[in-house]
Each structure stands twice: as C-alpha cells, then as structure tokens.
Length: 114
Ligand code: DGP
Image 1 (cartoon, rainbow, N blue to C red):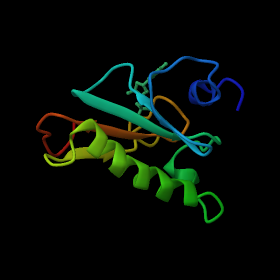
Image 2 (tube, rainbow, N blue to C red):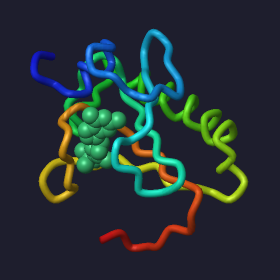
Image 3 (cartoon, rainbow, N blue to C red):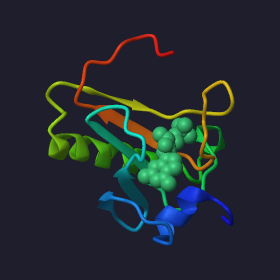
C-alpha cells in the first residue's frame, strides 16, 4: 500500500533489523523498544488492523502466532513469559496503520496497561 511505513519495511525499501522473514510475514525489532526484547510481527500483505481480519486473510494471523512462539524461544524469553499485543485505532493507540503484533519481553510486565 502506498505511503504505508510497514509496507515499505516489508518490501525492504525502508531498512529494519530483521528477526524472521518468510514469504508471508516479517518480524523486526521495534525502533523504540519497550523492553529488552521488542519485536514487531507484520503480514507482508497490507492489513490495516485486527479490525480488518476476515475469513479470507486470517490464516496469516495463525502463522504469525506460530512463528512468534519460536522467536520467543530463540530470543530467550519463553521460559519467563512475555506479552503479545496488537493496538487498534485511536483508543488502542495504534500509530502505524498496518496490522502488527508487538512481542515485548525480558522484564516483568504490569496489568492493567496504561
Ligand atoms: P503502534 O503504536 O501499536 O502502532 O506501534 C507502532 C510501533 O512501530 C511503535 O512501537 C514504534 C514502531 N516503529 C515506528 N516506526 C518504525 C520504524 O521506522 N522502524 C521500526 N523498526 N519500528 C518503528
């Protein structure tokens, strides 16, 4: 999608520190990490947010969660636990309108979130 930051990262036009890549998804380090580990998982094909998940495009979401489990093991945060979160819209404080799953780990989390 034109003028989409994460489409640019997915295409390799905008540089990122890649953690995992295949034909469907990309995982890369967040530019403003909120913990010792902060990885973003995105579908390469543009989906605006979790509100736009349908029966036609939902398979990639399962794939992201499957890969995220392996990345958590590889990053050394699986045993202690970590957080997966996807922000949606204004109240959810979504700032990049291309669906992404945050993986934040390596420190104790609190709940509820701010
Ligand atoms: P959200 O607020 O949920 O839409 O999260 C967007 C995240 O994207 C935020 O944690 C910062 C990250 N981010 C924004 N621009 C860039 C960038 O150019 N490169 C990388 N690696 N991360 C970015």
